[in-house]
Image 1 (tube, rainbow, N blue to C red):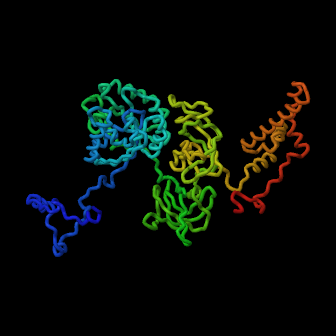
Image 2: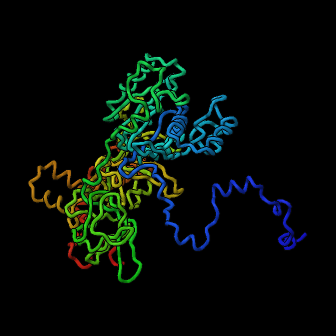
Image 3: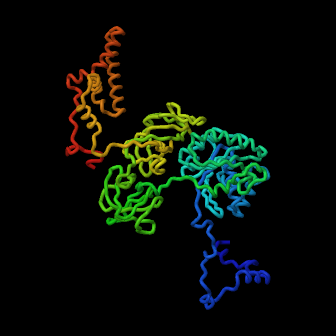
Length: 586
């Protein structure tokens, strides 16, 4: 039978069947007869959303938090239990949970609430969390965005990603195992990204018979590491995520605990967060909006302060000045905008602004320079060594950069800083970053967007590290010549004979950067070794060879000065028309 014939076939018995009187009566009862055209004109207009109640009223606050801790501490189970206790699990999800618990569950005949969060097949097969899972729920007084982060050491990078946008952390501890190395690592990363409020949920209390002594011992162990973390608000709650003890309702199994339940604490906590609105105006430019010849706008999200029409602004790193001509939001032009809003700004003057530049209030003390000191989490399985080259992404800017020095590594067990020659995967270190171009950076404690960055492998395009700025290096103002100024000061000031000899011996390296100075010294050492090798070929005694090489290394700069070989050409003046700056002539 062809498809055309099938389309023209006679109706089957089901199509010709007449509905039963009972079914017809039920339809009429619930749906009612269809009104004719005359009746519809007299019917009132009903808003379909009139009887729909929002999950959370606008007045209620939103809390973003994460769950973290070591593997198998029960993070996913805790989130699943929270969703269940707050009626955020739909009927079809509940049916799927019952089926999946029999197939993938690890809790026997009971429901495995972790399956509400762990959706990847690899997560269900292995019983671990791999990727960050975000879930949304609300109660009568608050809305929540919760991130379930992996506890396995291999996926520490995913945990750091989830923590970067959170305001509070729920750190789980297995009551049987206590504080583990991964618990310490997650706690340190939580502190690293600026989270100040923490709830330490001591889970699986049912497996230790709800022992008050065990709870107190783990609390003492965790309080011992708090001085190195910088948390300002820490709460300890004994829970059993599997059975729901002290999750939403107070448990009869812990009569010795008189604090808040986990959900009560989440509803009442007021975490200390960054107050971006109180900062100076700052906007990293993400896009130059040029729809036609008559409009040029600069689009981005305000990361600090507020802006209004007529306000003066400066464009960094070039320090060009102008005035705000217009402020455009998603729905058109507005008079002003504040932190967190995505806007397009137009300027009164035609000045060069591109992606990666930062619009700031004039006189902003934010640092503009070619380097900064930072705390770094290394995230790939090859070691980080000083001198490594990367692409640095900070806010909306990207620039080639290198790790100039590895200043220290953090011992994850004691949080002490120790010397290190390399960082291995998931290790945390203190580094100095050098960039090829000036970048606008601020300490992370001052501004999250301008104080956080990632390092990207330029060959594989893999994110190799994430870090936070601790101290930004400020470059001298444009137009100054720090080397020339220091040389002039050195010439004007009277110098002692040893100082004059040292300056003469260093030559052009006297006022050069450290890298240039080291390169010159290495070249002189190589020259002395070449002289020694030639003397060896001519049969000179070893002792005389050593003396000759030492004299060559010590006296060659003075001989060069005597014969005028090291006289550098006179530097060009800034107003010299033959002087071409960065980007000149393009």
